[in-house]
Image (cartoon, rainbow, N blue to C red; front, side, top):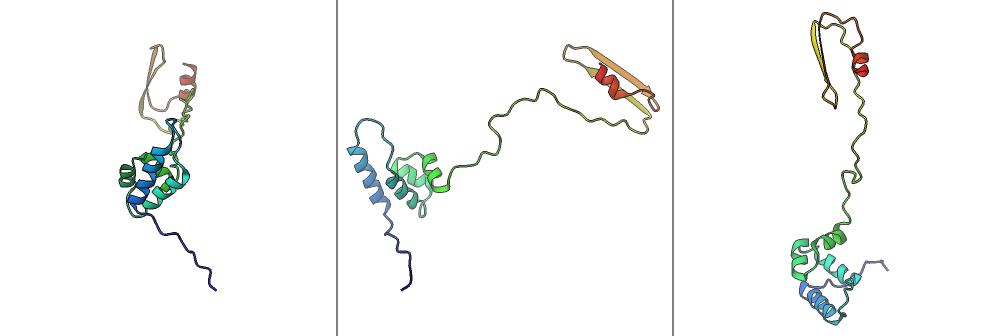
Length: 131
């Protein structure tokens, strides 16, 4: 004998809607979570209809139904992002410089401007660090 997957007949939108309405009428005034079996029936209907149609027809949360159908979404960016307190900038002096101007300003508004022609005989990176 072959092992075949025998699946239960799929419920219609009207049947699931009636089950949800029946559950809503019988529950107490306290907020109760919708039973998993009802969520499962609603998710199965999403094979025929869109999540939006099912969530509207059954008065369910679109987001909750979508999570049950497609699984939780993966965040692309970290939620705990901090501003850097230090940024390192790598600098290499050019081999030949015919003319250059270096302007620096610190957070207090102090400024330094260096203008030179030809190859500089001093360490520009060291000067910037010292400033």
